[in-house]
Length: 190
Length: 171
Image 1 (tube, rainbow over the protein chains, first blue to last red):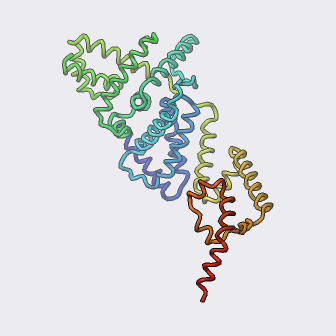
Image 2 (tube, rainbow over the protein chains, first blue to last red):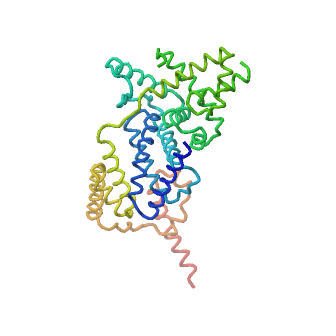
């Protein structure tokens, strides 16, 4: 994993240096590399495709503005996700008067060959998305970063601006809540 | 629940989310072998985490990313333009068509009104002598039925006297 991270870091550094030399194509390469991750975090955080698309656009606009000043003290993706989470939290507080109802989206099922399995899978996906959406915004952010983006606790702590212990305790509380919510909805263990 | 159980439960989340080092994992397995409560909790947390992971990944609608990249390029290009060019582009944008139209109508109205009315007219000549104006007090304006009536009274009564005073001061 460390080896993989080092390769990723080198690639980011190379793109960053190219961008600073004035190569706009390097920025496009960074966008292509991280856009899916940013979009998915935003989508999980905000619940709708339109809001997630707007936030993703705004993230990369801000990154383009600030990239020449990026000091490299953290990983590029940590910085990117921090911008994403902050924008999502801002957007969420603006939209707080509206109930957060995740849209159906285009769930991509990896497993489930039979049609009835597919239908059940969609229903479970909907219930899970609703349970995640019901979490407080910061808890939701941590769950999304850990479970869906596979980020280590240390990076999540940097993104959220808190200690690693806080992330672990929050994750514990969030998973307990999710477990209860899923049980109430009648979602069985896989 | 003992402190040890609490510790183990917090580590369980790391175990369930796949970030626990192997040596710590074996210590937790040892604890679970002896603690039924933690075992149940561990099973439930692992099941919830697995459900969440399995619940499918969001994908974007077809054609979304090419459009996204195009829009991003446009916005970045706009950001790099000078302010005057950005304003022109903003006004020309179809999204702001109504605003631009309203602004144009407003600007036209202001120009027409300014031309029709011409330059501001000079203020009407004040018929009151300065000396008389100085003698008007607040009490007078409140007690007399109207300011005009009061001024007429003063004009009629005081003007000769002031003329007399001014005559007296002449050598």
